[in-house]
Length: 425
Image 1 (cartoon, one colour):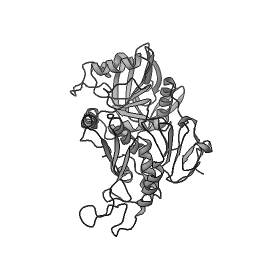
Image 2: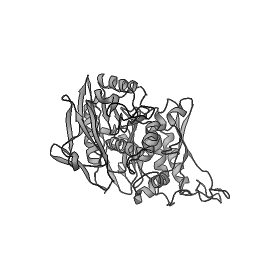
Image 3: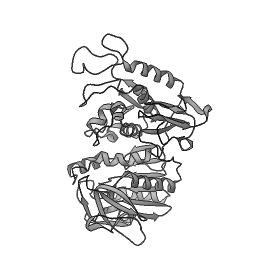
Image 4: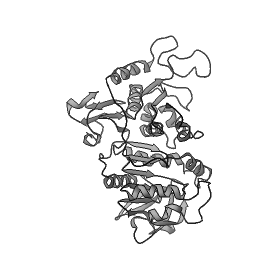
């Protein structure tokens, strides 16, 4: 299930021939995310919340990835049970396939007459007549039958580890510091630039990636530090988030200052840290411009070879380094000592991708995402707005150049070559 804390997907997947999860976008956006849902999210969910779980399941091992239960309509278990938007069930099927799913199964076929889930929709109503999801499922099946794709090639790895999640969850040091939310803000910034992301364990091989993002890499030993150092020295670009290298894998504080074994790689130590309620407006300064931050702030003490990218503007840490970057071997590593706001994150991600030589898009509208699989790109719209794509007419495989509400198009154009209206029409 999405954002599911009590099962380590990395470990359990090692011996599996098939990896799957259950996708319920309108429920998950209500009960396992901090922000209140917008009306569009009530109708279709959050593409990055769903997408991160797709990419986690897809990248845990080389086994096929399925969605074992796809939401078929309204469901019975969230706090509220809105009807999905017209076309949302088709959208979700395409979205899953664009992220690498080899099969999408719906739960359930027909609404049950008794038991706990009587208010859980099926593709068919209890009288056997088609429900709202039936035509969506039929349309998606017909469209996807004509699509022949193999794998997803991601140039960026996002490091995710359940032990880090559990360690921070036990001692969050701020009620608002949620491991998954912190991870997802980095994921959201990458996806808003149209790049594909593998969500992998920190010990995973990194040779196939040009860039690695490691938010909240809380538990670090020398082996992991050596692993990341080798990646950087061989030309990789690394972005490390706050609260990294604080403890050993046994959840003990390092005898050295954070980031512990990563201090030599990052070229800094953390002098102090502090946390605030999320409504306290933290900020950092970059080249005279102010960027918002929230919840968490570290005062960094960099060595002379490390470049200061941003400084704090708030409280007793004002003027102290907050974000740094350092060249190492043929690559470089940036360290972000705050929970960055979306504008700062976009700047950090764009810089990371540029240094990595990864093609990326202008920042996509919220709710619109590109998913590249083989030579096809899925353009998904999780909003009620309408957008125009600028792609050659002959490149359109499914849908059209106008992207309607809760709509999807499949094109044979690379994501970085697609332009989309920044304003809904």
